[in-house]
Length: 266
Image (tube, rainbow, N blue to C red):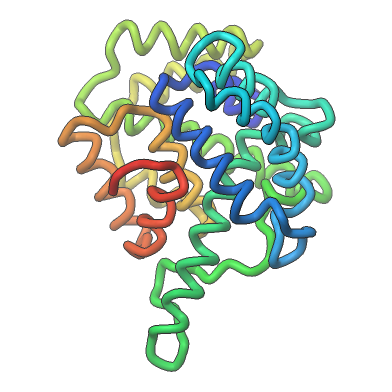
């Protein structure tokens, strides 16, 4: 079966459109400002995200001058989502998962703090989470079981990106060819390609997809990745995001923080 972490990294590096690239840039900038100064642990970015932000910092500064030209933001994303190297610790715990985990961790932490300060008895409403311990993606997996959990997280994120692409009722031929082309470039094996083709052909079933999402961190990461997959400029896409948030019990404060981090109007 495909390594879903590798496939996700490839999609993030070269499979998202211009708006997705800009949103990834916004997220990296926001995480650098909000989490990058920490020393790990509960108050900081953690080793994996910290390494990612260090790798992106210089490139984002130059890319901001002309972010969508060759050698600009595309090159930055290519380096931080490329898998391996000093900026990431292997494909499964690489740039794509670290960035999405960082967005989710920041949103859940900030929303939990805000809700806890204003809620009865200091308790956060359901769906804010109040994240404290670093989730997988911000820390390296320990053992085969955690590696499998992280690979499953990448699979669900990919499914979420495919689902929102299908939210207008179909995946167009150009979009299908682009997705398959990126998968082949990532070295997807036959079994993995069969999985991808089946997901693209499968009718959208949001209820079944939501039932697969195991925890609040993964739900927030899936939501953040969905903002990278499409322009979010149709009623169908906006309705899909609304239903995804509602059915995963994402509190509006969490959704708001994710949108703010990625620079997307709520």
